[in-house]
Amino acid sequence: MAEIEAEGGLAVEGAVAAPPRNKLRLIIMAVGLLAVLGVGAAAWFVFFSHGDEVRHAEAAPPAKPPAFLDVPDMMVNLAGAPGERVQYLRLKIVLELKEERQVEAIKPTMPRITDIFQTYVRELRPSDLNGSAGLFRLKEELTRRVNAAVAPIQVSAVLFREVVIQ
Image (cartoon, rainbow, N blue to C red; front, side, top):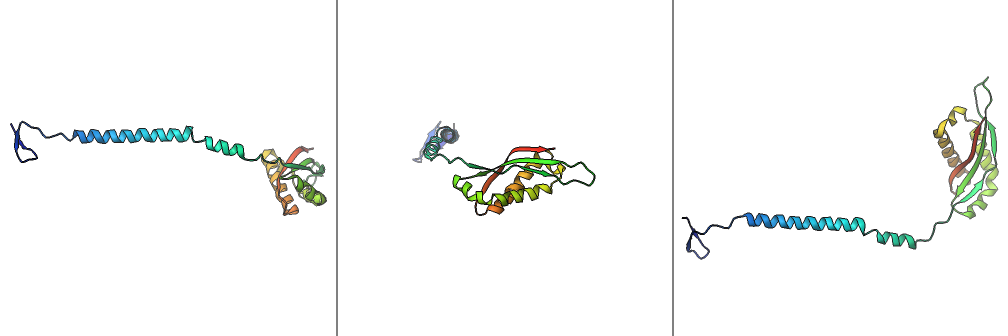
């Protein structure tokens, strides 16, 4: 049998060196423990940490409802090629504002807004208004023009109540 020296320098007969498997087993257990802790922490963040946000949202004051201002109804003829049938566009538009006090500030400029809208819409062709993309472009352009006319007041959106092409 093999003789292995013990720590004291004495030879011990039949003793076998401690296998390195115990260190490997210890490392695997430590990694497993860290993985379980990581999964537990992730689960806590996903399922339980949203309670604070809900409490903060409840404490926030309710948002003010937007204010709306009707623009006088418009009926204009659309631009077309010579010899084509004349087509008309009828629009009912509402302006969306952030606060009620902005409505009173915009009312004196309503003739200017109507003029800007009519001069722009008269230059449109029926093909410019085809589909939802055409109406979206019209809405964006009218919003841009009304904001330029009533600056520094900001109009949130131009809303269509009615759009009829005849």
